[in-house]
Image (cartoon, rainbow, N blue to C red; front, side, top):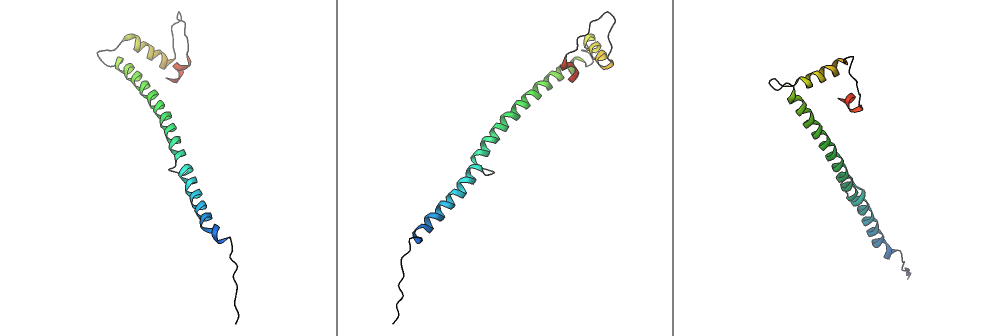
Length: 108
């Protein structure tokens, strides 16, 4: 009668722990770097702070423009404001005036 002898291998003991390490590594990596991971959360928070700063700047600019438009409405029309806007639009000034051009004036 033939008997086959099997030698116990040590590699069988490492299969389950090896698969466990690969499994945890894969999901750990995606938990940190994935689309909804921890790192993405920090990037979204930084982007939210940046966009909030832009929103605040736009709101303050809008309030300033609304105030200036309010000065041009009928009944509250100020001659100085009308004169300033007309000169800016036509790019004209009197001969006895000194004109100082600021960079913020060109953006308006």
